[in-house]
Every structure is written in C-alpha cells, then in structure tokens.
Amino acid sequence: MAYSPGIGPERNDLNCMVNRRWVTRIALLTASLLLAGCSSLGASGPSGRSIKKVGGDASGIMLVDLNDQVARQVFQNRRQHTFAQIFGNKAAGEQLVGAGDVIDVGIWEAPPAALFGISSMDSRLTTTGTTSAPANARSASIPEQMVDSSGQIVVPFVGSVLAVGRTPRAIASEIASRLAGKAHDPQVIVRISTNQAANVTVVGEVSKSGLMPITTKGERLLDAIASAGGVKQQVNKVTIQVSRGGVVASQPLADVIGKPQENIVLQPNDVVTALYQAYSFQALGAFNTNAEVNFEATGLTLAQALGRIGGLQDNRANVKGVFIFRLEDPLSLGNLVTSTTRLTPDNKIPVIYRVDMSNPSAFFVAQGFHIQNGDILYVSNAPLIDIQKFVNVISSTAFSVVSIGNAAN
Image (tube, rainbow, N blue to C red; front, top):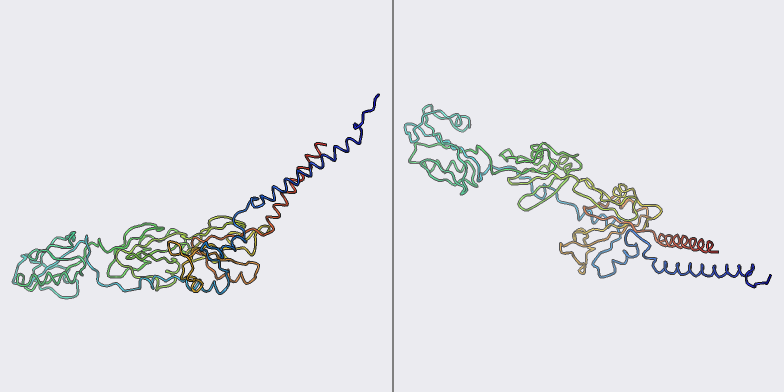
C-alpha cells in the first residue's frame, strides 16, 4: 500500500493548532466588541459619576451634598405655616343674611293702634328675654320668605328691604324705623329660619360629604369633620385641606386634633377636604424595592423611607451614591441659591441632594431630613458592578467559544 503524507498524527496536530488560533481570534474579536459596547450592558439609571457632573454643566440643576447644616437649613425654611397662622382663629361674629336664606319677620305694635289688625300674644317676643309684650299687643303674621336674587325681602307697609350682607338686627331696625308714623310704637324681630347661604362644604375621605350650616356658635374645623360622620381612614394617614378665599392650606388631621389652636373657627363658603395618604415618593435604582411609596400626612424622614423600601442592595448599590431628586422651593435653600441659579417655569429649582451613606454621620442626617411629596430616591450602581458584568459576559463568551472549538476538533 502506498504511503500518503499528511494523513498521520502530524496532520491532526496541525488542524488542532489552526482551530485554536481561530478560537483565540474569535474570542478576542468578541471581547473587543463587548468592550466597545460596555456602556450598553444594562443599568437602572445614571451612574454616580454622571450625576456628579451635573452640578458643573449648564443644565441648571443644583447638586448639593446633604450634611447636617443643609438638612437643618432646609427643615427651617420649609416649615409650613399652620391653619392658625394662615387663617387666624377669629371668633364668630353676628351672622349675616345671604342670598337664598329664608327670613322670618315678626312685627308688634302697642295699643290702641291696629295697623296690622291682628291681636295675639306671640311667644317669640316673650322668649327673647329683651322685652315683654302687653297682653293686648297686636302682632302681624308675615309669611316666611326667601331672600331674592337682588338680596331683598318685602314687608307690608314698608316695601322692599335690603337683606343680603346685613345682620338680622340691622334689618329689624330699618323695618321699625320705616314703620314709624304708620304703626304705633312698632317692635320688630327678624331671624334666619333656614340657613342656605352660610355653609361649609365637607368632602373627601369622610363618611358623608355635605354642607354644614354656620351659626353664631362659631363652628370649628373638627365640628365640620364630625358633622360629616368622621374620616373613613386612620387619623394619622389623613390630611385636612382648607380652602378659603383663594387660599389653600393643608395640615395633618393628627395635628388638628392634638393642637387646639389649629381647630380653627370656620367661615361661610370654606371648603374642608379630607385626603388619604396624599403624599408619595418614588424609589429607583439599586434599592431592594423599586416602587412608588405612599406615606402619612405626619411626614417621613429619609431614614424611614430607606427602611420602607428595604434599604440598599448589598451586592449592587453604591453607598456613596444615594441621591434625592427634588423640585425645591428657592426659599428652602436660603443662601445656597445664587444669582445664576435657574428656575423652572413654576419657580422651582431642580436639586439633587447627594448622601454618602458610607459616612456614619449620614444616618443622623437621614433622621432629620424629611422626604417631600414627589421626591425621587435613587441609588446608583457601585463602580465595579459594570466591570463585574463585563467579566461575566466575557467569561461566558470565552467558554462558549472554547466549547465550540473543542466540538469542532
């Protein structure tokens, strides 16, 4: 049999060497492509390094290192005014007549005159405690009437009388003065029999929304809540909002209950709204939980917020890269605001507060820094996470290529 060179063991060794070279080239090419696209390995948001660059560019975003001094300053400047400070606690005065109110007018005259021609003893006069009617006094029975759209009522022998915006006492005085010379020593009593104008609207998370009439007693905020059957949720989760004359203010119901001065006297046309868990923040990035988290009206600190979302992921989070994104009120930042600070159309400042959780003092700062409605809490990945991802991908790719090469031998 003839000898054929290249078919023996030497030929097989040569093929193996060629295959290994191709495997090596493929692995290197794959590694190069992955390295070029390393930034696309995947992430839940910007890196800590890119966020740190924000403060130095022209984006108009402020980057503030959150320390004890900053936390105290923001807390003092953001301290909200209370109901008592905004609306006052003015005692209720004499009630004014409004459009739609139903008015009752009683008129008495002394004998022997009989302009109205009805002789009777009206119990309303004797129960006022102001005067006593003689036994033969004459009184007029005038039907109750609603204040019309022009704000007036009509009284026999008197004509139209302006009622809107006046006290019942002032209306009675005018009627009596206009009856002088027609009736003998006329005595007049005016009262609001049905209150349609002086009401408070109570809505929201209450058992029964509706209107509560305002009287000379001086109904207070908690009276309005009680008249609606109370709130349907836990007290510490409810915020009370009061709207009056274009001014809107909110305060936790727990504060209104615990601080008597905040149980303010209500005024006609006030709107009282009970809101359930009106506040929330978003947790994004390398936290154990990514979600929108509701919190109570009594407030929430950064430390409590971190606890509610399960803290940071040990194997992924950058402890020096905890950030709070907020549209801040310029007054809250005080002297941190400069003449070059840019404002949003609604006069807010985009601020990123940076927290270094590797510093033990940061935990005390977190206890005094309050989360605001709409805040975004974000923690970036640790710097080595992207490298670890890259190494894992390279290792997986290399093993796959080697396996393919071995299978080809």
